[in-house]
Length: 434
Image (cartoon, rainbow, N blue to C red):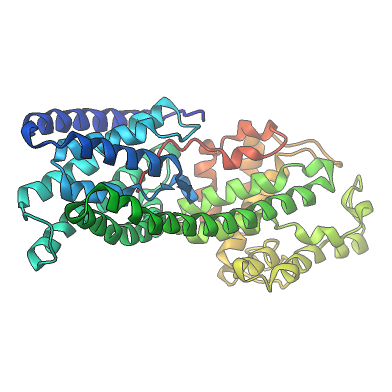
């Protein structure tokens, strides 16, 4: 993956690496080497290697594996330096493909800090042999919470700096996808440590079966989600293929819409729904004659009346799809105008769903900056001026203002790409082993 880090992200990554190196050296010097069980070290390293080699990819750059159960068990068993070495070395040696040197560096630094601080805190509490006493369980909660909070903080910040987006919405999404993994893996880690203490390494080998089942549950859900997203993408490409002049239009509109929604402070869950709606916002055009869609010159009143039906038709097609709940209204009303002169219902101002108002600006901007059968594309500065002039009449003035502000971050040079795949390959260097 090509990773181009903005200056702020580079500074953050450098600071993270320096802090990680300092902690690593400190933990090395406080380690009691006489107490290190090297056979157990190699065994847990192998477990981390296996679990980190077969992760599950979640949305927004988050990578989850069951390795946290093993890492948490290691925190309860080993000295902090051994925990860090197992975590970092196991991740580095794993069979995961496609990571860049920057991603390896970030993961090594964040794993060192996350597991090192968590293990050090637990070691300082010195709860003794593993049992289910109140003090031990309370002490075990400390590294668990530290792992969760530090991991989410480090990943959120690198993603926010790389995407140049607001950290809060990214953090909420990170929490949404990673919290269930931490919660479900922690008891497995505790039991793994208990089995190791009382039975040994062979007991852990037998206990690996439920961990594999937990991993499979992640895969099943994400495969279902990915299948749905692939279907939406294919449908979007099919819609755009009806007219060679609009090839890639839906992909670009989705990119602009999601960037604008994030800037407006939308949660990632709402942003995801808007992305789906934007990808198929012209779905209703499948019912419109190609003679009208490809006509050179102005449409007649009758033809324009037929064209206006596409937003209603599109919303009708998807309104009963549970996964797209709320998307139907966005599609239906994306041609409404702020002054109430739009269609299909002539809604005015804030009566128009906010998602539809966002989509209206993104759709108009891409249409203006793309070639059409009846005119050449406008240059970016002219299109911006058109958005400014339409603010308060055609567009929500607040949304128009925010959109103009983020235009420099929209990678408009990518409009020359034909497939639109760039939307799904934005540079996200942060991957986390939860």
